[in-house]
Every structure is written in C-alpha cells, then in structure tokens.
Length: 230
Image (cartoon, rainbow, N blue to C red; front, top):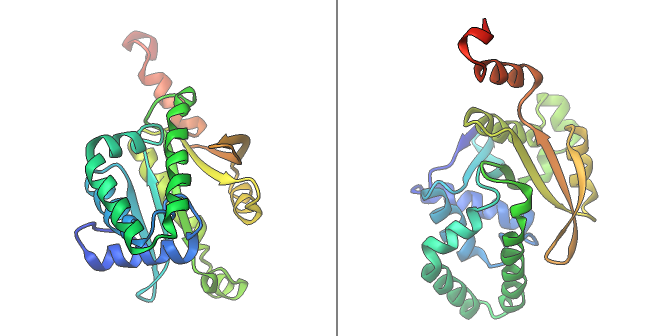
C-alpha cells in the first residue's frame, strides 16, 4: 500500500527519514545529516508543498519510499529564499553535532548552486523524482513472485500519476553516471537517457513523458476554436 506522508506526523517523518538515510545516505539530500533531512526536507518542504513524499508499506512495515516535486527547476531556490535563516541554523547545528559533515556541506552547497544553471531546461511545472528507495528484502525475485508487486515500479507510477493529474507533462530523474542499477531500473521503465553534468560530476538525465498520444490529442482539440473543434 502506498500512502502520502503527513509532515505533522512525527512517526511518518521519522520512518521516511530513516529509510532515506539507510538507502540513500550518500545522496545529496542526506549529505547534510539526519537532522536536516528530518526537519527541513521532510518537514518544511512538505509543509510548504514544495515537495511530496510517500511510503510503501507491506503488512504494516515500511518497505520503500519516494520523494518528488512538480517544481524541479525552482524548488531549491524557493525553499532557501523562504527559509534561509532556518537552513543556516540547521546546517550549523548539524555540523556541531557531527563535524564530519563539513565536507558534505561544501559539496551540498555546490550542488545547490548548480541548480541555478538549469533554467535552460525550461520552466516549471517540471516533475522530478528526487529520491526513491526500496529495502533489499522487498527487491528479491522471491518477494516479486510471491506478491506480484515491484515496489520501485509502483512508487514511480505513484509520483507520475500525481504529476499527470496536476498538469505536468514531463518528469525527470538525475542519476549518477556510475549508478548502473538505477539506470537499468529506469531503462526497464522506458526512460530516455541524456548525459548531464551536475556540479562538475558526470550524471545522466532520465526523462519520462507523462502525456500519452491520447492526452496530447485531447489537449490540442481543446485548444482549437469551437467551430474548428466541430
């Protein structure tokens, strides 16, 4: 079962933050530490509706998660603009608790500023799956055969369905070029690959069109003058 998390529910926030750190501890959102992830990413960003997040549960246990946005181009900038003082305080507090975060903070800042150069990708709304992960025990062939469920597929489909309902026609993922399992996963789902550089690091853009031919035809017809549509 997939359910959207409630940022006011501490249990939900703790569960998704724990999954994120366990599965994607090396990623850009987790580089600033557990406190930043829990309070800002799955707190402030969700409350401000700059990001959404969902948990996949199997028999009441958290098995996977997805975080996504319809503001891929601007949500980083908008979040910092609204909450720069809180962001600075959280980062400083996190580094006091764990001095090892200093190097990670510098890298995270580089990644954030690299987002400012993405205006050539177009304008929002542009969908993006920001983070996705599934616990290993739910990825096994035995689990898939027993349940018929591919949790990663379901999570991507959940994000795509929401974005499609809100009028978003493209969705992307930004994947490290060496992350072969993720690239194979998105290739199986039909993603289009495009080389990309993010803060000086080789990456791959994975693109999904969220509007099918029928959707585009209906949209084109709706845009015609009344007499032409008839």
